[in-house]
Amino acid sequence: MKIWIQFLREKKTAILLYIVTVLLFLITGSLYHVENLYKLLYATLLTFAIWCTVGVVQGIRYADRYRKLEAVKQKLETYGEPALNEIVSSGEVFPNDVNSFDGAEQQLEQLFIQASQCWIKERQNEEEKAAERRDYYLMWTHQIKTPISALKLLLEKNSDGRDSFLMREELFKIEQYAEMVLTFQRLDSIASDLVLQEYEIISLVRQVVRKYSVLFINKGLGVEVPDEDVKILTDQKWFSFCLEQLLSNSIKYTENGSIRFEVENREETVSLTIADTGMGIRAEDIPRIFEKGFTGYNGRLDKRSSGIGLYLCRRVFDRLGITVSVESEVGKGTRMTLIIPKPKESVRV
Image 1 (cartoon, rainbow, N blue to C red):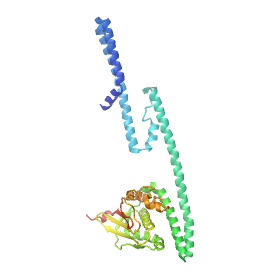
Image 2: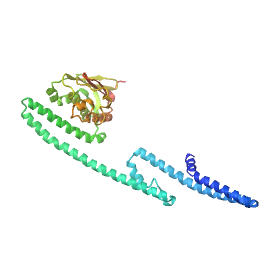
Image 3: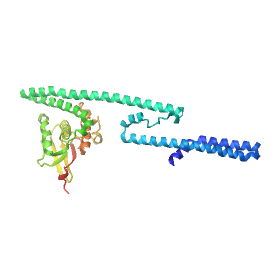
Image 4: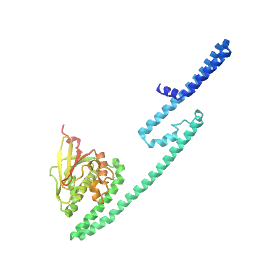
């Protein structure tokens, strides 16, 4: 009924024109041929029947096309861009019977199809270029690891002196930046790369701390890791990457003091907190620190900050079902708390 009401509204100009024409026909005819008025009424009823028949046929076609457009709209909302090419090629939007269209509608159909095909072609070209760039960055990241490994071996043979430690630190940073590029390129396919298993959280923390030991030594920072270990459900590679990013930020913005890990075993989750004694984060920056490219006040002090690390962490945490909360006070330090799922058999009922 709603479709028919809309159809009548769209045809109101033609309906009004028909009514005015019939009235003029009857009035004019009655003025000159009053005795034949019943014949004029018969002709009026006949034309009304013809108009109604044509209107019903057009209304059925209108309703059918309206339902098809609604179905196409639902398909686009459900499947998005991949459905557009199929819709255009299958003729779902406009039927193949061009006789059902007038000239303007045929032009509209051709315009729609041409615009859609151009858009699809442009989109495919962009995807091909993006794939080429992605392949190049993946190749570059893998190739850069070879000279990094060679430099690490050379430094291990000449490990004496303060300069050696400083060179190790800078080489370690280069390695982490290369790893970040690789992770950024893999982020879109993370769902197919996840392997969720049980891990002891302190074991993962200690692995990351050992990896960053050269930075702790060079900055003279202390680190506190609890002995109590509990199991979590996560992906080791992706969780460790995020933990490395959080620890790297703590080290970067902490000039003295220590970094402390805290673990709390809850009913269905495990809470892991990374607390540092660094410069802290301004209150107005906290809501945006996980946005892509956002560096905040601290990032502007450190010209090398890219605003990518925490953004990658947020994307990965969303996939792992981990929530993050941040507490910070300028000049006193920052606390990053992760709420991590526990294995089902570890949840107490």
